[in-house]
Amino acid sequence: TKMGRPKAAIKKESVTIRLSPEVVGYFRASGKGWQTRLEQALKDYMQSHP
Figure 1: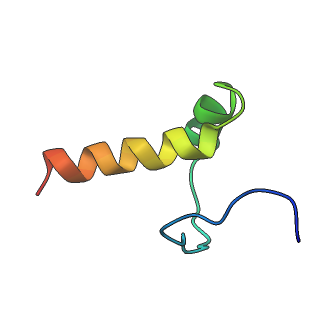
Figure 2: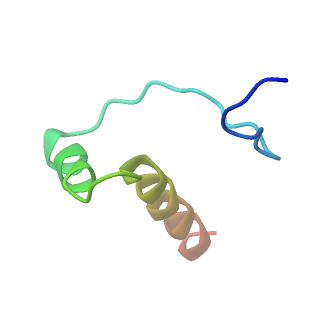
């Protein structure tokens, strides 16, 4: 059997997006998991702007 990270219930889509260095730097400076936090910020925006 293969070891490693378990499969996610919902597969994420890989995309390419251009962001300002300010935005990327802000999230990267927060450390490991910065992409997850960026995604959560986008989800929060979606919830407050239906």
